[in-house]
Image (cartoon, rainbow, N blue to C red; front, side, top):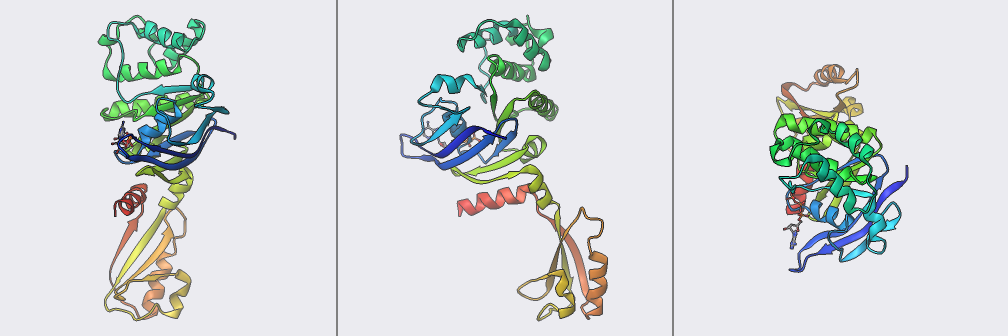
Length: 309
Ligand SMILES: Nc1ncnc2c1ncn2[C@@H]1O[C@H](COP(=O)(O)OP(=O)(O)OP(=O)(O)O)[C@@H](O)[C@H]1O
């Protein structure tokens, strides 16, 4: 797949001297859902703002659909829909007029058939003549998406789509995003909910302190997360891992009291039963055993801590 958004060596230093983005490079492929996961203040909104042409970079380049976001601002901006964090709608306007007006701002000719399709897809068609002020919070968020889709963009940016939203609405938003993807929209969303990145994304990028720390296929990350560790506590410390146990590639703790076996929990045969038999044959006595599993949360927290230290 070809990259629809290409970010290269992007840096942003705010006026006060704060470096919010540090040489960020990222390729976003057409049709994918990329989740940018990062703690508060990591630089997610800044990155989106620069890509969308709302904020200017200090150095580096961004191209959307091959158009440079600075030199060919209009061409790039036409391809982008942006759903902001804040609900900024005109309360007395109707849903239909809101999206119609938004489309007009992009200089696109009136196309009510397209707007009908967008509103239907977002379950807002029945509300087309309703004033914004009479809508629920969840519906207002959907109107923001409808507005962002009004001019037929190819890439949709969702900045913290479910911040402060209850669980039910969050799931509703996840379904909406999946549906948009099935209609060929490329989606980049920012979130600090790990669960959200897991639920929606094809790829996950972790951003911390203005740097992209990792970008991986979610499936690969999940495969890694499928790895479990069996920690074996011994009755007495062992000076070394017995030769008979070498095939298990056990890690010995510094004090020799624990041996750790890493295995794939999703495999039919984990090797645990055989390991326990072999341990006892090697003369090691167990005091206790426990399992541990690394999660995206561990990876995330690890990266963020490493950063803070
Ligand atoms: N206009 C500005 N002037 C100076 N510093 C700013 C400005 N806007 C943002 N920052 C700083 O840049 C950093 C990144 O902010 P940004 O809003 O991009 O983070 P974020 O990852 O979107 O955070 P959140 O999850 O809280 O929305 C923060 O430390 C913020 O205080």
